[in-house]
Image (cartoon, one colour):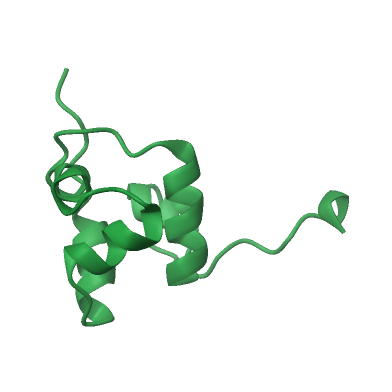
Length: 80
């Protein structure tokens, strides 16, 4: 089964003038492991998606290409 190529990860990273190594450090993984995420050769774990969405201030749905709206969703009243 082919993985979804997460082109938005690369775009978000480049928008902040960051290297793959920079994001890999945030996720506590190797640069090559992160590269696999951008290429779609490895699935991004849910916890890493959440970290990236918070870091970039976007929704997980935006990263996954399910929406073109970058703005993250408002916090739920259940988490207050």
